[in-house]
Length: 155
Image (cartoon, rainbow, N blue to C red; front, top):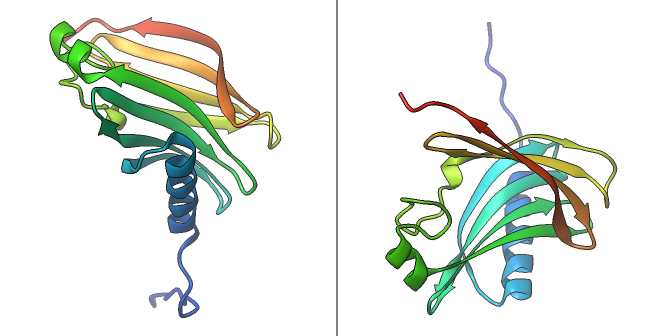
């Protein structure tokens, strides 16, 4: 068996990189801060991606966003947090997170529907279970429609 090689046009970039660039530039402009981490969670072809973006802190203010990137729009679900309050209470986004966005415990198993009104299923794993949230993209936002928690006994 032979090996196949993928040819790339000189000067072009992979689409995934373009989605990251579009999302981080748009996010920086809309949120007024630069991005710290861009973590892809779901990808459909070259034109659609869901990712978590953690922004650099502005004083006490922390911000993470779930981002749906489409060819003509970027939609957000913002997750703000307070560094001072989080350190005092034992977590910023969830208990015992050390004020670090746990993006590796997030997932997007499916995105359904037509552009401009898509449904995004997101999961957030915790120490004792999983939060499952259904979002719908509307006017540049990911609106939360429903959520449920699935308990799993600690091992």
